[in-house]
Length: 555
Image 1 (tube, rainbow, N blue to C red):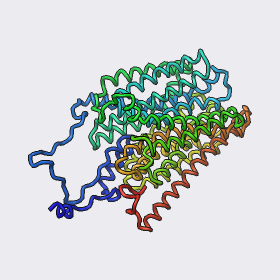
Image 2: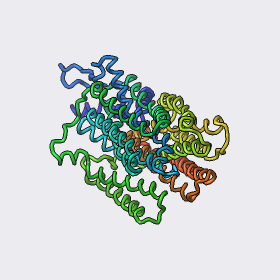
Image 3: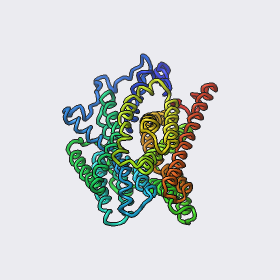
Image 4: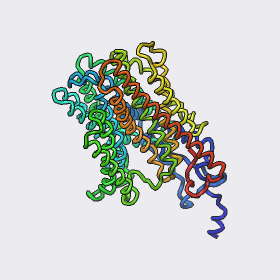
């Protein structure tokens, strides 16, 4: 009897059989934020329905916290979560806009030597974001979200106080500020994902959060540029006060979400739940490698500690893979679930986003140090990124309905390449509306379409039971490659201009760094082409359903 019933049921469809409606819902959610990936809907075979558990048990519609909240409460709640990404980007913009003033306070004339203050901040976000998400799973999303804001406020205030101390204190404070941003960012998205039902309301919430990225960059630069007219530490103290106000508002506006898992009761439980051995190995590896590349621009490769950092970082990376694959019961990165497509998509993201990090840093320095623009005027130069970024974020879901993620990735990398070439070849004296304006438009579109495309590509290449890791990996690679790309570009710049601080020497070094960005974007293009050729080969070979590809889609 049971056997006959089993035979009568149609087979469960695989991922590639999703209909247009399911793809539309999936892509719109994925394009809107980090944790929306958890809500992918899988279609039911035609004519099939699941029976209730018992004849008397009626089907229950799950309720979500936002269904019980007033509209004003929902608005305040979503606005508070939006502040996580907004404030993360403010931290980048305010440092970009005040590099010259910071250098003058610490008697550092070469602003390129200050790029570590920017790279260290994004490095901390990239290296801690996976662990921060796990902390939220274990101890509550709201608690970790608010702790992140308070932590960031403390270290933002210390960044301002460092004017009375040394540049080393300022650098350390920027790195530790990034840890606070890493705590808030993934847990903010997790809060939205767990309190909103799948549908237009949830997609809108994630779209609003994603739109904060370009806005935060400009707001940070504008506010810091204005306050720097009086004294640059005021920007960091004002930001610290803003972070504390947001934390206070969030305490009342954010609902208490019921945790999926019980809080670890003992230290051993916490170590296993948080995967502390893997976290220590991974964070040590990423920090050491990035530190070596950023520091070598100042001291060169002749210093033994640079090589020691690189070798130690490689050893820790090997240890991280071994721990995650063979030892950790709950690994931060489930390597066994990742495919070759996953690694290729991550490499594409690393190339594109490291290119963007170089572009934004050196475009800013080009405007200020070569064209002698003020921080406020330079901020005005990049302001169009708000409009383009918001439009790209809102339309990326529509774009991904009609094109495969790999095609959108290819278009994004073409835009990264074009935007970098426009700045790298830009003459010293030229109207803003020629190359600089076009570069801002192109790069803004590239960065705001690449993230949802790569997130969706990762989702397609990872087994269904591990879908939640896709956007977390994308965020980690985004911020880490931003930092590492700056270190590589700064090293290239230092070897080209060899300390020449004349305008001609600076220009030569800046161009070398920007051509490095072009090379990275070009490498990403080649990887995109390899992905497309691989997909074409699979279709011709008819192995889309072969072993190892079940539960996955083409990217």
